[in-house]
Structure formats: C-alpha cells, structure tokens
Length: 330
Ligand code: IDC
Image (cartoon, rainbow, N blue to C red; front, side, top):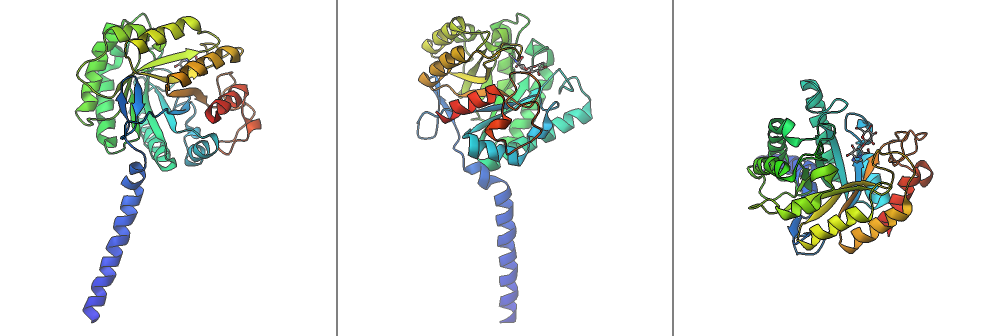
C-alpha cells in the first residue's frame, strides 16, 4: 500500500512537469494553423483564404522596448491584428551584419522573445531580414543563409513563423540577381523547414512585382513576393504593376506600407490610402503597417509624446495609427 502511494506521487509529478513543458512550447504554437499559398493567396489547412493584418516593429535595435508580451497581447485583443513583423535591420543602426557578435546575439534574443510573445498572443510573426541602405541582398548573402538556416531549425515546429528574406532591394539590383539570392536562402530554409511561408522582396524597394511575375522561383511551395507602398508617394502606377503581377498568378504580400511619403515622414495621403485599402481588400492581400514606435515621424503609429509601451488608448496614437486601426476593424 505504502509503495503504491509513492509511485502515485512520482507519476503525478511527472504529469505536472510534462504539462508545464508542453504548455511552454508546443501547445501555444499548435493553436494557429499552418498557412499555405494557393494561387495568389494565403490559405489555411482547409483551403480557406486567410488575410493577415498587422504591424511592423521599427528596427529591433532602435525600439526593442515595444517587443513585450503585454504590447503584443494588447494589439491582438484591442486592435484585432493577427501578425507582427520583427524588422531586423542588417546594416543601419546596430544592424545584424554591421554590428559585433554581442549585438547579433542580442538581436537573436529579441527575435526569440518576439516569436514567443506573438505565439502566446495567438499571432503569426514575420522574421524580416531588413536590408535597406545595403541595397543588394547578395552583399550579405552568406550571413543571410547562415541566419535563416538557424532560424528555420529553431522554429520549424512553430506553424506561425513566416520568413521575409530581403526587405527592400534597391541600388538598381535586378530581379534576376535577387532571384539568385532568393534561391540560395529559400534552399537553406527548406533544408530545415519544408513548409513555412517565405516572403521574397522585389526590385526598387519591393515595388517591381511585375518583374518577379515574369520569372518567379521554381520548384518550391509557399513562396510569396512582397509589394511595399507609401500612399503619399505611390498610387495608380504601382497598383497597375501589382494588378499585372496578380493576373500572372504571382502571390503578393504587403509586408510593409504607410500613408506618409516614402521617407516615412511628411503629410499623410488618406485618399490614396483608401484606394490602396480597397485594392488590398478586393484581392485579400495580407498587409502590415510601418511602424510600432513613437519616433517623431508621421509613419510612427504612436504619438512622440506617448511613452507607454502597451495599453495605448486612441489618444496615444498619431493620425496614421488611428487611421490604421480603423482599417483593421473594417
Ligand atoms: C525608415 C524609418 C526611419 C529610419 C529610416 C532609415 O521610418 O525612422 O531613420 O528608415 O533606417 C522603407 C523601409 C523602412 C523605412 C520606411 C520609411 O523599409 O526601413 O523606415 N520605408 O522611410 N521603405 C519605404 C519606406
């Protein structure tokens, strides 16, 4: 009798430990369905269209404080978003490739926290290799291959993790050159994770989706191509490119946009923004607004005077933040 009781206690403890372990890892991740690409759209396991909507952080080295559990849960519950983009600059301001090893470690830790917070909040999360002033993604190709292999091995069981392999190629880098880079990075990710959705940047700050549509990558599933716009700079011309790309069957993802000008400042163009939202909603394109910060610029969602890192009220948001929240709720 005595012996039996002892085993019951051990068994009970084992169950508690196992439950705690599962609770801290897989159970949360299992809540969100894995997404797939079908035609030009994202779909869930049943083939139903899924439109992700959410926000991008500013650079993770610039504004790391906004990556916190309360903020992510707040945005999910109060703003109604279902995706957060973690923008990790590769070059500017303690970028992953320009900073030292300690900086790289800190950035990887921030990403890990971001993935955990998004997962616990029940959201998808984009790991963004944010090239910008380093306009040709081949410049840091080796680092990128290594980084994404590591990320894919780490998060292969997180169905909610999406990889964005080059924010905005520029410097006149051609689609063929981006395609060469993308083939290597996609191969590296696929060596660890066969299914995750991967977003690929396009020429001219992710605007020339029509060029990508002429010659998309072959032999891989679940790839999408990014279209970025800032409504005070980009209108009909860019929408026509997007329309052309869609007609050719290219899956598009708006992983960054704003209604300021392309510098991230200046007046907002809400009328053009409304035209873009109409287009995005018509084609069920996923969209992510730039940026979750209180920087003194019109593309920041939070007012410069607001120091809160979560729990924002409408009055804490700038004009763009208020406008974007309305779009999420429509
Ligand atoms: C801007 C930030 C600004 C920062 C600048 C340089 O808003 O605070 O000083 O980058 O790093 C993009 C880029 C995105 C830009 C944004 C606005 O992906 O990094 O952020 N933008 O210029 N493409 C078009 C516009």
